[in-house]
Length: 72
Image 1 (cartoon, rainbow, N blue to C red):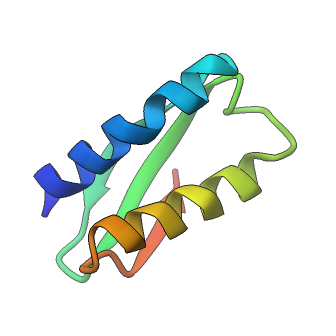
Image 2 (cartoon, helix red, strand yellow):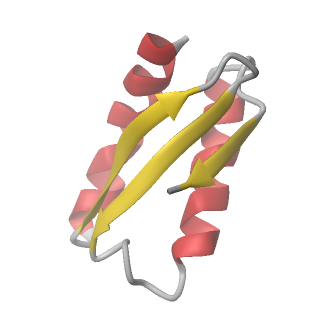
Image 3 (cartoon, helix red, strand yellow):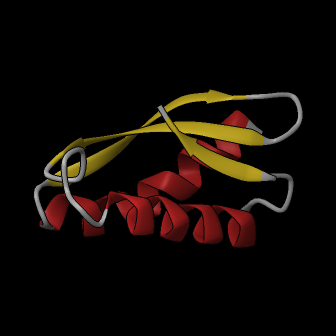
């Protein structure tokens, strides 16, 4: 599943990078929790919670095994 998540993240990275940010995959747990770290402009942005939710919604649509996305 980690490979599927990484592939999906690679499709949304250009959008984050366009605004000076990025997302790093930290871990995927056995129960489908994806742990990510927002970097660059996304790390300290006041919209980081909304960005994480958007990433979660996207990943759930692309990789149905994903149960949640948590920032670390």
